[in-house]
Length: 320
Ligand code: FES
Image (cartoon, rainbow, N blue to C red; front, side, top):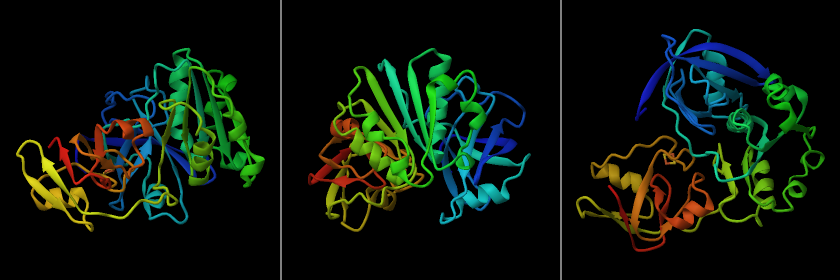
């Protein structure tokens, strides 16, 4: 694990719903934890050695704890199973300081939050934050059934209940929230945020296609398997600080080439989900292949995720 790390104690574990547990993480000496903003995540080193990212669900004003929630994924790669099976109350875990790729956009006059299943975690933090600041929002929380619905107590609380609607679809999305209908009319001043499983992400993406650039924000927690990228071509990178030119062959990533040449860049997921490897791009036309930057950020071309993205131009100049 690279970057700033913290040791935290697992103070409480709650069975929030079928297959979903929340973990309340505190400083072992009960000191305040580093501040975070709604939408932030932490990287957690699991007992089985894997690293996983989890969004913080509690109110950013409560910096005495980070509350994360983990869905046990039956067909996962062992990360969620390790959190469920190996982590006990009183254990210590190593985590990174919070990072935020999914912030609230403060210029919006209304915030439409759309959560699918466990994707509620960052959106719940946003709802709590917006509610605490008296700002206008609505949270639509889509789950299969009451048994699969986490944080029931929180969403029924006096602070949130007036702005939260829970939609159960019984396993058939057609019986759940009409996402296209909800977002059919572009609401002046509103921003949309969504997070959930792949099908839900696709439905939200389609429903917001006509929304103005910069008003729609999303966070993926998995690589979208349906996104297809072009061929992997070879290109060159230029290291701005030294002028060094390095070839990136078609079968290597930028990070591979940097490492092979002794240039360290911090990475985590290495599949374009976490944003850890974001690097300032000084020149060139990037072929963005990440799920972190939104369309507007991709169009601006100020950053590139060097673990997965490539080049459309013959060279890219990186601020390294
Ligand atoms: S390391 Fe996660 S996006 Fe590059």
